[in-house]
Amino acid sequence: MEPFPLPPCEPGGTDPSAAIEAWVASPQMRELVARFGGAVPDAPAREALDHVTEFSKVWDFRAGTKERFDTARVGYGADDERIRDLIHALGNGGRPKPVHEHYDHVVVLGGGIRVTLGRVDFTARLLRGGTTAATVAGLGSLRHRDDREHREGLRLGLGELETEADMMTAALRRFLDLPEPARTETGDGWWHQTWPDGGIHVLAAASTRLPLRASTACTLIGWAEHVSRPLRTDRVLLVTNDPYVRHQHCDAVRLLGLTYGCGIETIGMDDLATAEWGRPLATTELLQEVRSSILAMRNLYSAVKQ
Image 1 (cartoon, rainbow, N blue to C red):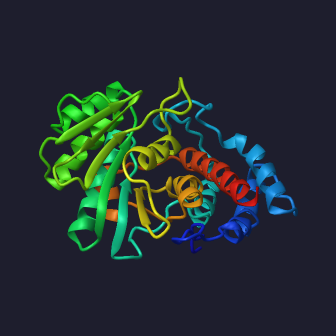
Image 2 (cartoon, rainbow, N blue to C red; image 1 turned 90 degrees about the horizontal axis):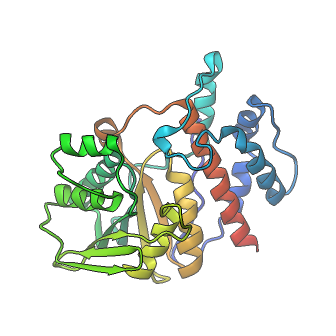
């Protein structure tokens, strides 16, 4: 099954409603929900999204606050392969290659240490391979690394790094061959590093949902406020990885595309980066990201149709 494309967001404004409506009413969504005892109602998209959002609590293996690595694992026996096929068809992975040769801004989303390294490794190869950008920014939070990340950082020779954003700085320096940042600006719960040419940045974004750490949405808002406020003519390329592409894309379209009118394109890591830096994901982890995608698609649809 060919995966569903992401909701479109071209510079100047594109209505993503039709793509969201088709996705929630798709045979793939209907079958996946049915396999867990639910049903997608034959109803207007807003009502269907609300219903599926409520139903998707059955896939909340993070108990609301756990980090993704701590997601519960459940086996589905003979149904497992079909469930994974349906998840793939719902299009949480995006494409691994940009559509355009030039972007006004390339934004690398942060995460755990290997995810961050993989995304930056992939981005660096894109830039060496001919993709150009006026600015490149790595986003992160002030979330402190756990023991697993600490040990992995030492094993990889990255030294003592305290936060998620510090990992992004280390990754950019490693794969873009950068010196120490030339400037660090700080504020209430955030900092922003810039390199000598002014085109490369790392932002440790402030949380808008204290006492919880900054989410992807927080980092996107922080990027527009502190790094590069996009214009209606701008194209923004977001770099993340499967299976987080869809929900992070929808958040970016809602928070940046609808607010500033810029274009948003989101891609996932290619096979080379995935093989080097990724890990096999349990079916429950994939289902968790289906839930995240449902929430993000509903939020985007509500923002467009308000």
